Image 1 (cartoon, helix red, strand yellow):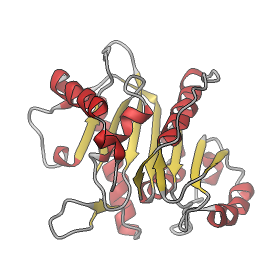
Image 2 (tube, rainbow, N blue to C red):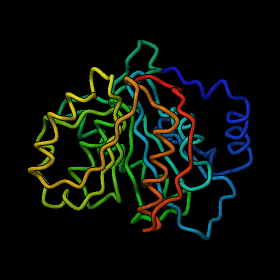
Image 3 (cartoon, rainbow, N blue to C red):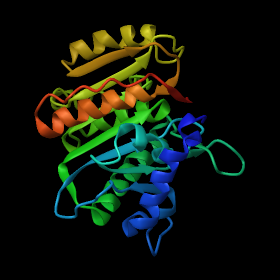
Length: 257
């Protein structure tokens, strides 16, 4: 995964400062599972406030630490966040991962996501009715899959360049999924999640009466900084039940799926 945010000394410095100054960002006695989860605590963390929780599912050929590059563009203050590692290794060294598409891999991913949520709630003050599932690329596809199956467990789902699932009966719980706020961001030049794929999914979404906000961006399989800025606005609208103040954000591509 290429990420231009890593070249920003200011953003990287803020992340490193957070990790060194906030003891809950570094677990003292990590278990096997904790080695595969990245936790993020907001700046000026206030333990008496219940924060929204963002569960981030990384893109293909990446890992749980992708979260560290996502949060500066999403928000360093508004959320607690966590990210589990994908279920399938992409390289012999076991440093890059993806989310498997089989029934078994999906079932494992579900367990990992809920275990990750439990761990984040044990380390931070979290509003359990404000847990959002989000992801990029293959992680966005898995976010769709899990959120549609367990819509009552999430306050919303965000899929960035993630295909709408076609297999494993994604709408088996469609009656409850109708009430799940959803945001789908995609690049108009993408060959895996572009205009064609979106148009093919629209009839299914319409038939199931899903509540989906869809936004198009001038890119391919990329994660743009303004995608994350727009995601932050969308999330905060649901957290506060008020329209978010819109900030103009320069369009910058800092990663590709």
